[in-house]
Image (cartoon, rainbow, N blue to C red; front, side, top):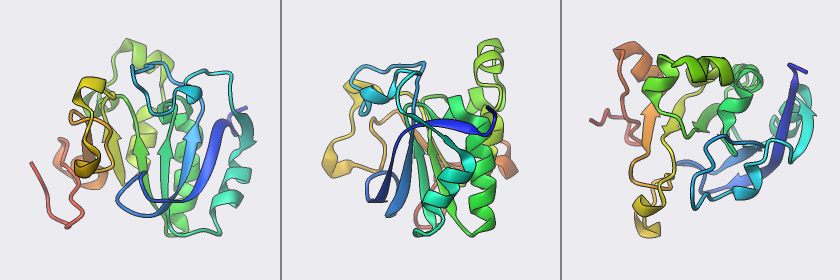
Length: 179
């Protein structure tokens, strides 16, 4: 079952799940269940459909070189998505992943995270951009200010720069580092 992932769907040519048009993989299942969630139908762990990582790779490989992992909560499927990310990156893909968890908690997990999301750090380290933080309905980002985050508390992390620096470095589409 390590090679099996439960998905709620795949969308091609998505323009809102990142700073680019991309293929978006929607994982099934979420422990957080944020009030006002954009995808409440993806919260139950038992929904969606099972696919092998090979099948998902074959669905994505022919399309443009940008992919976003959304949910549900991708960290539930961290081991499988990290494997998929490694394969996609070998083909030249750039990968963004959304998570309701914080960078600091993923890098230094508490006991609950180690038990329920043991491979979260591996997934975080295998993507290029990580959007972190729970969706908070009262902090909803107005559509005109939309920066591919749902609420203003969420951060967009440049993973490579953050790993090199040892602290979270915000992603900038202009190529610079933001505070």
